[in-house]
Image (cartoon, rainbow, N blue to C red; front, side):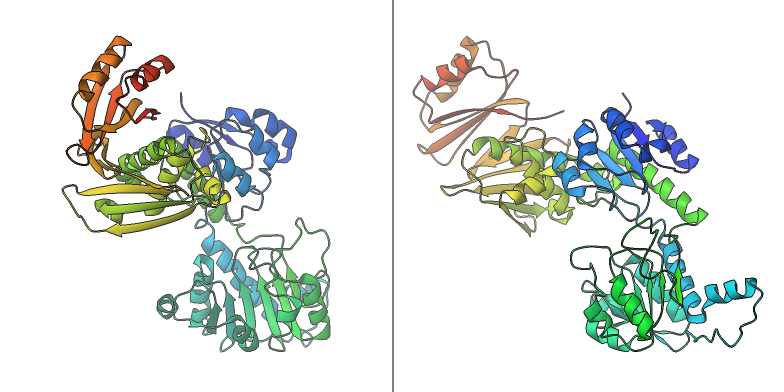
Length: 531
């Protein structure tokens, strides 16, 4: 059955057509974005949800979304999605950060021009039949210093455009490297120095705990007298009441805002102040941008539901379609290794250590890590997946560490997973053969070569004669057929293990019969998802 997608906000018809062309079922019901009860009633029928800003994907909606695998926002901001709850439920949350980058950057530049030349007020005055030429004295942008807070995708475009206007550009961004700053030709500063030097300040950061009120009353007081402030990023980055006070005092010469702390903004401290330009969140409001993000969101949802490719996800590592083809067997192996060790571990896990050898060390390790963690957590929560598992592990205080190394043995690459508890460490390693099938190659430091099957049996014993016969006869007497049989030992007469792939689940009677032979230290049935 084809995956089903719901579009609950207004979206370009081209997006609907993409879903259809890719073979997905799609329901276009834009009225649901403003009808929470109706959305809650039907969301359980869908694998994917495409939204804009009207739809609120709340905890209640997520609880009702029994089949939902992905939510994708046509645009950048995902304030309307409860990402932590979605992550715990295993739902991927995506946005489309690149479709409206140019449009938003252009709007910031336009707002900067508007506040520099008081264009809206001058236009309103002229429309009213006045001719107040001397009243609207402006300033040039050429030669002025622009302080850019946030030099990411949109901020970098603003920097480029501002340099074209012959402005001096400085930037504050904790994640901006010196190499990147040199490449885009911007001077990197600490925030206080930027505030003191900038004639214009423009913000291009997301709203997070660290950026909320980044232009607080205290920081606004550090700005250069006569500064003009532009915010086309997110509401809540600027203390609007403090800014209003400084506009009234004249310390700030002007402001241009496209976003507000409360939206829709029916009232705001900045409204009706002189030389304050306000627009109703128009940063992405061009026909080109709306078409771009609609097409992107359709492609991203389709790619994930059809191929497993993850693009622009906010709660798990992205995996391109090309990576998904190559990494698919390795991600499956990572899950099997985690699942094996998770089923074998009864004590609380304190740490997970993953080692990547050879070709796999150059792959998307964050995605592979998620696969390992999901496998380990599956014993405690069968519904866990690559999205929810890292959240659960973090909540439990489990520490994750990874290492890589060049090819060290006969295999082109392998993954080794070790878990640490208060009582012991346990490890298992595996590789992917040329046929794309995952294999277990080492358990507890003992080399093996075992195919992964849905139903398996793991035993440990002393290396003595008769083990193979005991396993075969006991399973045979209980009607269990062996599909694959692997043995390994630490050394002659030492510890030995067996890993069997059997045709059906092992019942309690069979396990009891094996234990009662007295030959095995451990008898453990294992189950793997090999679909």
